[in-house]
Amino acid sequence: MCGIVGAVAQRDVSQILLEGLSRLEYRGYDSAGIAVIDHGNLKRIRTAGKVRELAEEVNKTVLPGGTGIAHTRWATHGAPSVANAHPHVSGNIAVVHNGIIENYLEIKERLLGEGFSFESDTDTEVLVKLADYYRRTEKDLLSAVKAAVRDLRGAYGAVFISSDEPDHLVLIRSGSPVVIGVGLGENFVASDPLALMPVTHNFIYLEEGDIADISRFSISVWDAAGNAVKRESVSSDASSGGDATKGNYHHFMEKEIYEQSIVIPQSLEGRIRNGRFLPESFGARAVELFKETEHVKIVACGTSFHAGLIAKSWIEEFAGITADAEIASEFRYRKSVTEPRTLFITISQSGETADTLAALRLSKQQGYLGSLAICNVPESSIVRESDMVFFTRAGREIGVASTKAFTTQLLALLLFAGSLAKIKARIDAETESAMVQALEKIPAFISDVLRQDDIIRKLSLDFVNKRNALFLGRGVMCPVAMEGALKLKEISYIHAEAYAAGELKHGPLALIDSEMPVIVVAPRNDLLEKLRSNIQEVRARGGVLYVFASENSGFRDEENMKIIHLPAVPDVISPVIYTIPLQLLAYHVAIIKGTDVDQPRNLAKSVTVE
Ligand code: HGA
Image 1 (cartoon, rainbow, N blue to C red):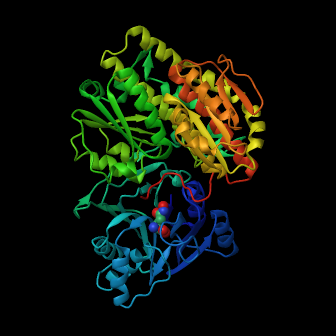
Image 2: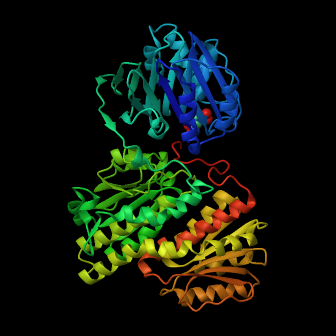
Image 3: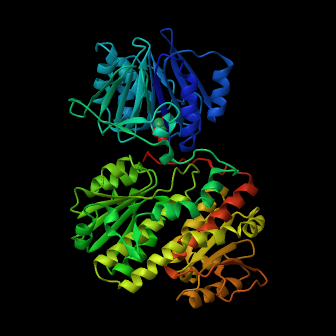
């Protein structure tokens, strides 16, 4: 979501800050701003729109200064406008902020009474006014910020600068990620290490409630209780973050769809051996915890939730124990019952998804057996707070609409279901070996599907004037249909719904006419005959069908029914394989409609606010 970058250096930092922002822009991008301290004066430039526009404004003038902060905003409070863009300023202090100050109205009221005035509709502005208020009595910026933090409720990762102390950044973290980038005679901060890769590969991750004072030569950190603490620095290999360029592709999303045949084997590496699952690849305690597990609770949001729904079927089918998948933003506010011996699984690409992280924290007071995180970012909060971790190794995903992160999550969950089944002796060696062989074939099948790209591109022309679309699947393919609908709506802005095909006659059939494209995922499995009947129900009502079907399922093109033939794949991997053409369909429809594919309107990557 919002991106934060800050620097304290001897050289001018505005270009470093702008480069950092453009690397974070995929997270949130309705407006942007920068503030630097130029010879003891605070200078600020803000623009609505993209970082490019901010860079143009900055480049029209000279913005010298070795200390500065910058921000890309994804609005939560107040419209995307210049006045609401960060940095916000009060007196000599400026701030950039990621998160939500929940009691901002209360604080605003108080500060209005103290004679302060406000220029924006944001919650963020109270942070800087409050720091300015306390600076009247406190000796320096750090003490003023420490005092301000005591009044705050909500989530924040924020950086303050003050022209009174031009060589300092003050950083606070509670509920939103921030990281310190350690340089030589210069230091940096950001909401994501990716922003700082051009200047350092050494990072210090702050803990919840930490406050840091950073100058060119020193980094001091205090924990939530106010004790001075040492936080170790870790070296992060730039290559593990994946390539942040589009290469020969037009969009990150296109590149990431194509990368799936590469990242899946990468993700399998060391997790299977000689046709066997390796449960220990889930962590040192995995075997012991899996043995005790009698029920699984999966909590996630968006695309990751769809992966969770698919995993629910796999866990019940293979491991023979009950499993639930639930949306994190619902789970965290519901009075739920914890079954004895339940393993709690979170799924999150970024590992910073605010609702999922909150659900994980809540689970710790609810008697779960332990927690497992399926995540793509090693240093993330969810990873650090979980008992077991499985890294999806998808490489950095930049496109807002998740593609390779989703299919590697599916792989992780299939390995989990297989490992659990093995530990519970629910599968014999022959079944285990067949499952593992199927997993090993995924990359080749993905390549086969990608060869259909041109056919899918032509088909996407049919969708250009459509306002709605219906996706259908049965069994484990129902969440695949849900994911297909989500991809289409996210990037093409066509309203799309997914239904379990058996539910058609209980309502959605009323929507069918020649204007409603119906997309069906139809691998050859036990439910295919049932699905054929559902397809007939649509045809009988004049619906237009697009059936993604296994090449051996006997479907042929007919009037108002186009068949897209996909390879015949083992049942167990069909959710992975059938996801790919739906990603391609959404991508091509979005291209034809001319939307911003990698940064669709109103959305952001890594949802770090509630
Ligand atoms: N609440 C602040 C920051 C929003 C944010 O963190 N988005 O990710 C605002 O609305 O400006």
